[in-house]
Length: 126
Image (tube, rainbow, N blue to C red):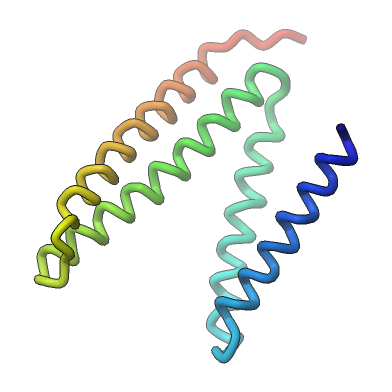
């Protein structure tokens, strides 16, 4: 089982590297370095936050971080669609996509909030 997890992990890493190369080919690398540093710092800080907990609390912290990240992405997608509609560049199904993104934002933000409350109320067993 460990070998299958390792193979899956390295295949995903290779796929991410190929995706990065594909998206950046033909473009200057300079502006991308700052974006990479911001993303890297965000990942390091979230991993540091989750590593502060153990057991049940770590699982709740992981759920909270992932839900908050998903809420951020869903909120950005909703704002993007609504801005497109506002300026007249929206597609016919833009309202439906914006509504779905708002719904996903509400659900994932609720999960993140619930996880934060559970994380704060969980007993520390030492």
